[in-house]
Image 1: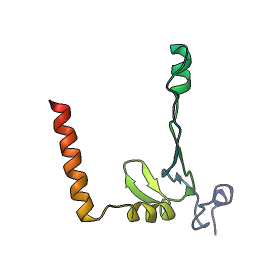
Image 2: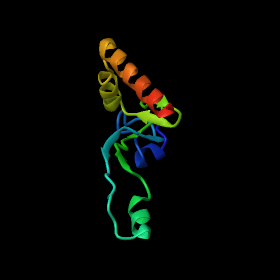
Image 3: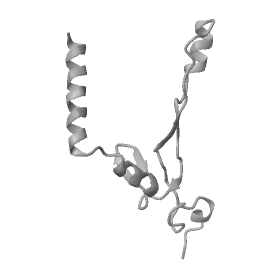
Length: 106
């Protein structure tokens, strides 16, 4: 028999278990204002969350754990895997990051 709580907060993927997690995939970035007349207003405009996430409700079994307290829905997990750079480009990325690191150390 199903747990009655499942019907109030079902997993959007399987619809069998209760949703206990939300998808943390970033779907949008909120650009903060650069020029503001006073510091208090600047702090007010720049406080809080700076990005929008998917927030699809999921159960622990359907969620793909990406790290400590970071979970993706199956759809965004597939996108994340596809976004991996090919090995040849990954080498160029590593060289660039290394170069930037050494420039900061100087």
